[in-house]
Amino acid sequence: SGNKDQISYGISPATMDRPDIFASEIIFDNENPSEGDVVKISTTIKLLKMNVTVPFAVTFYLDSISNTTAIDTVEIDNGSVAWGIENAYSVNITWTATAGAHTIYVRVDSTDVVDEGEEKNDVSRVITVSSTDDSTDWTSIGVIVVVVLLAFGAVGYIYRDTLFK
Image (cartoon, rainbow, N blue to C red; front, top):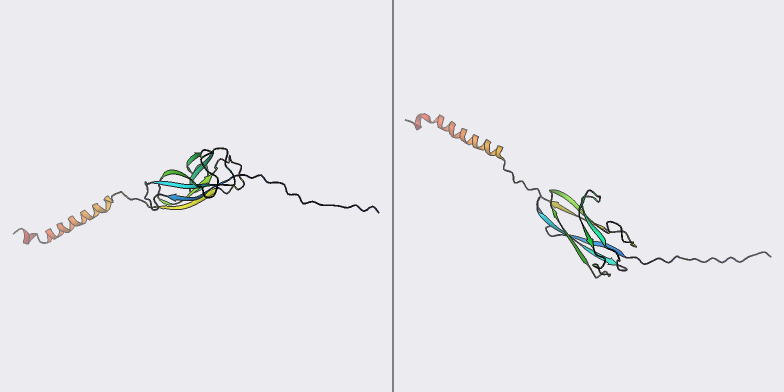
């Protein structure tokens, strides 16, 4: 008597497999550099799910991720990184260390050309660079020399009668 059957179907849209590229670590060739030292910075790139079909950029940043803090960018050819968690591709740059504690960031696919399933492409690591003080403190040296000369002069003046008889 006017009743209609309703049938509902739960349909999930198919998701397209997409690659996932990411940096797994940052390695410094010198863990305790001094100001002015050239430090080799390496990162290991991994690729999951499927191969990348376009070249992409890996950018290294100093202290924050912005256009003004990029240390260097390396372009990676689309055939360079092999698919699979067991595979790794190393990307290296050099950086002239500046004094202080710094955070080095690496962003894979920094220009967003790869359509990825996951966009968690950043990794970071802190490095502390010691300051080098190669300047000589001429003021202190001058004061010490003057004090020593005055001391010898005072001793000579006090004992002048016994020294020059």
